[in-house]
Image 1 (cartoon, rainbow, N blue to C red):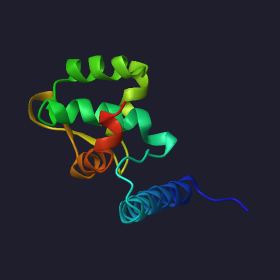
Image 2: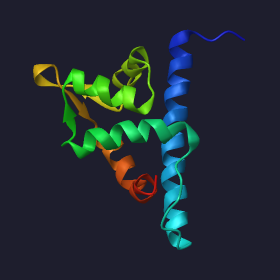
Image 3: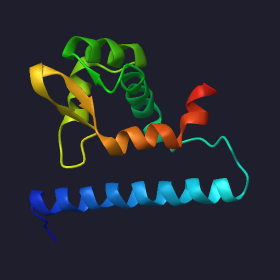
Image 4: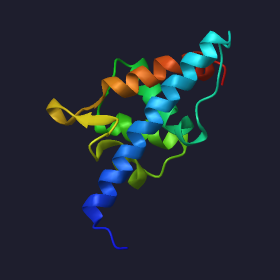
Length: 119
């Protein structure tokens, strides 16, 4: 069975959305169980750290600031482009070449705030 790249990308985007929804459900259940600090899925840890640093400075940074933040977390500068591309990107370029945190990524930082502060 051969799938076109376009179809595979649609499948990957669907998986990403489903994972976000499952993470939200996991968060809600953890709260119902009385857990106040719960860890994000391992694949999100470094992303959350980048998003948190951007959110801490108002949600918008210059390209240079973004590079510094990414390197401080351990990202190779080439890998930082992934945050800005795709239909579910967590960052977006705005006026004056600045980079802004999308609302859904900001919400993820809030969801894992207690865990992030415990690190």
